[in-house]
Image (cartoon, rainbow, N blue to C red; front, side, top):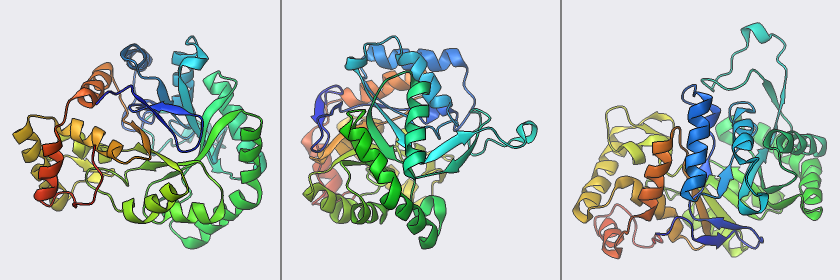
Length: 340
């Protein structure tokens, strides 16, 4: 598969390369990273041909946007696509000396609060373009209104109402002014897409963890409903936070938790089919989501240059149709699941 072939994102005018770069890792989610290592990683991505980059104010509490902005500031703005997110505003903490940056292992010492109002989204956008050093953002994503983060219907509905009654006007205004090229929402779990579609008008979804080689639970329900509306998809978390990159190792992670015995057994079954066709597990995981006609791009992360080169190589592997057919014949994938 050609990593740099472009696909249109839904009905927007934004064309994305099939392989992008997800920037949560350089916000130091798992470990603190030397600046020269991060910049070398981003330069490797650029030199390798990657032209779509996704970030967020939440990633490293501003650090990811600053680092990405530094790497891209000298690049021609019309040669790359940039997406970032809204929903959290950063500020000085009340007690800087004892500030806890969790869940980030590093990042910057800024507190955050949720804000999906008109003013909150406008301020978030303005803060982001300053950190990124750009006059416009190609894609703006509503970040993390779901049960994963809030836990209860009451909290989710309260923030959805804030977005519907106030914040969505800011998104429409930014798009009308051509300061953004598309409006999306990030989702992590089943049930969230439909709620967004019931409340607000969107161009696309950034689907994290919920449409992978191990989990297609959103395919026949919410993805199908969104596709009927002409909406596009970007897929993040294609490795389910680790296990589809590392394989079924003892310390493998699945959606940021230790992988269960059931998940490890399913991964081992996929690995056996990969071995019989002489392809890598990473290649299968990266290329799988692009079998869906409305998926425009996948967004693996990278903490060091070799991760980027490995992702480009895996995306470039040729996977025969027989591989996908064998996964289906073995019952690893259902027969109706779209594959490349």
